[in-house]
Length: 316
Image (tube, rainbow, N blue to C red; front, side, top):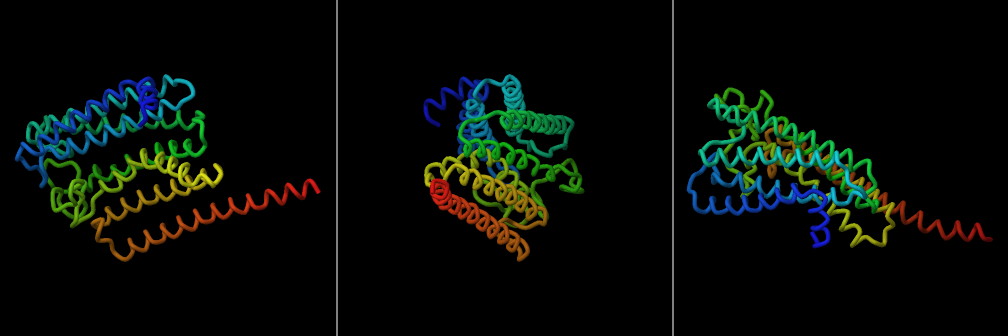
């Protein structure tokens, strides 16, 4: 983020920027905890979860602040919704860090009345956060944001990140972790939580993991605007209408990818060990995406080639 963008984001919504700064501090504290605290919980260093959530919430907050700064005029509704987001994210982080200090898991934990109350508070907070982000999404979808391609990137990012939040719903359904006393959900499918996983992210390597689709969908918030920026920089020879259509193709493909990753996890398959049906589904998505993007570019080229002929025909 450039210094100008930083100043605009700070003016647009200071609570989001301040919260992002606090998450940076929390991430540093978590790294120290990973190194200095030997405790392990669900198979990983106990401070790894606060680190991941701090980094994720920090990026999320800065991105939302930047998006709000692009509005041609301030929206009180969006700003209030963003403040609600900050409050709900703060509740999540306080519970996560507090439970780490206590040596307890934060998610799905109903082993004691206190643990159950904290988990219910987290569940309520994330539902309110979803509703608040929906409000921000609607406001940004109804206001002009300048460049058409960037506007598509921002709106797609917000909408797809809501899909990513919704992808977490199966983690708390009654069918998750059935028969496990005191546990009200799970992110792994077909295997217990806490088994072998990929480095850093911890995604299961022996069963399905619902965190994958959740993660991919959430970070559309950053991926879609970044893609719009890259299209502007490296595909500037294409007119804005073509680049805007390419953004729509990318958004549809990204949403389908989020759904496919969640579907794969629900079938109990590790990310890196898909069966033939899963490989075929991802192959179809790849072929359709390439075909759609190629069609958009060719149609744009044909339209540009036809324009001079039409102009000459009109002046003959």
